[in-house]
Every structure is written in C-alpha cells, then in structure tokens.
Length: 357
Image 1 (cartoon, rainbow, N blue to C red):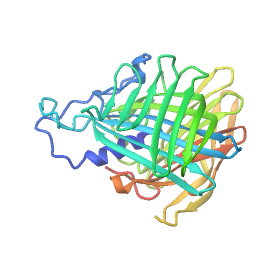
Image 2 (image 1 turned 30 degrees about the vertical axis):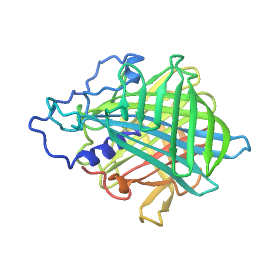
Image 3 (image 1 turned 180 degrees about the horizontal axis):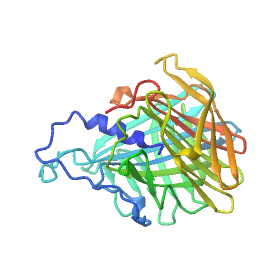
C-alpha cells in the first residue's frame, strides 16, 4: 500500500509523453490469482506499475538510531508495443532512498530515474534484481535481499535476512484499494527482516544492525477519482508480530477505503475489512518549507476476533517530509515511527496537495 506513491511518481513523469498510436492493453488485477515465488519477487512488465519498498530502523555501533527507506519503481508508459526503436520508453524505472537522522533533524535523500535498457537500468523477471546506474536491489540465491544506494552525503549498503515467511495481503495477495473491484493490486509483504551492513553519512562509515520491512505491489489501476491521498503504516512488533494498516482519504478527510492485516507472534493472520481499521490524529506538524500540515502523531486501531487493538505512533522526529517536485513528483511525509512494543514506517500523502493525475 505504501508504494502507491511509486505509481504516482512515475506516472507523473511519463504523463506528458505523446500518446501512442496504439496504447498497450494493461492486465487487470483479479482475485484468485495465486502468487508464486521466487517469480513474483521479480518484475511484472505487462502491468502498468509496481514497486519494491524496503523500510526500517537501524542502530549504529555507537547506539544512535536511524530510519531508512529504499524504493524501486517500474512503470509501463502508454507507448505503442510494436514501436521498434530501442529508445522508446517502454519501461521506466525510478528509485529513491532516504535516511532519517535525528542528529540532522531532516531527511537525507537521493533518487534515480531512467528508461530500461542499454545496460543502465533493468528490472529482471523471475526473481528480484533491479538496477539504475550504480543503485541496486536484488535477492540472492540464498534468499537474502541486498541493496546498495547512494545519495547526497550518504550511502546505504545493507543486507536483509528473512526471519518469517511472505505475508500475503488482502485475500491471497489480492488487495482492494477502493469501492470498485478493479481498484486493487497484487500485494505481499515480508516483515521482520533482520538488517545488517553499513551506512556512510558525510564521509563517516558506521556498521549497523536493525529490523526492516519489504512491501511489494503491482497493478494497472489508479486511485478512485474521489481519493486525495492515503495514510499507511507498517510495524514490526517486538513480540515478532507485524501490522499493516492503511486508509484512502476523500476531500473531507474521511476514509474512502481502508484495510490491513495483523500477523501475531504464533503466525495467525487477521485481515481487516474497511470498517475494522480506524486512524486517529493526536498531533500535527506544519512544514516550514511547504506549509503542509501532517498528522504525524497518530493512533491506529483494528478490530480482531479477540477484540480491538490500538497503537500510538510517534515519529523519530517531526521533519520527515520528502519533497520530490524537482523530479516531477509530489510532496509527502514518510518517516520512522515508534509505538508501544514496535517500530516501523508511516506514510502520509495528499496533505500538501491532492494526489491527482
């Protein structure tokens, strides 16, 4: 859910392209399609857009805590499939990475964009292997995820080892995103990843360990026309559980759609209908750069068969706003949050301006 933003970012970048003589036919996300691994770790180039999204908390040798995110996006623009030119942008890849450093008090951010091909940018099928220039995210034969990305003043060189099986979101990986059945994605997560590696900040390298979360989605549809943005959270719980919850908001701030899942420490999974997920706001923060007001201290409550469960989300620090307008993207808040018995990431979009295409 968190990486719907991927589709928005990439589609904004390619929307100005000339219309194709014969636009491609995009596959529809349908229920009952079994996800298969390792193939579904790889790209699905026929679909309009997809993303690979890793977030987490890291602890450096000296004890300081950092948040991080690494995201690769793939989009299939409306280019005529029969176009023989090697320069036709049949697949666009976009990636961004950020570090949330309390000592700095704002995000350190970097990004890449390229059309696929020429050995410069690729999204492999069959298993996870993505590259844009010197940025890389891949899955090793042993089943670990490895990434190396660099931005202005920082470098992330990390390995993520799974400790739990894949968590299929929605109904067997079919995840509704709106009131119409076609507003859906194929969606799975891999929570509770064991992270290790190194981080370079302003020329200083430190070893880090921590916990991470991988989100994967692919789809061919956009948000409901009434949607202006969404709130999403993924939490690695200290007892080994994992919570994902989201809501899609309308112009009045009401939930147009909602959903999520909770995997308990024993592996039992509860999946939530829209009426079973509620977000609340405890404190907001106004960006001094954009004027956007974000509800950065939240509550999220879910109704399980055992009763309601509720978490309070508090940010690692307030200013985790990411401004991607320089590359044609939106302004949004995405940052590390902690809660009672867990840590994770919160994404807030549509607060600076509606997420419209």
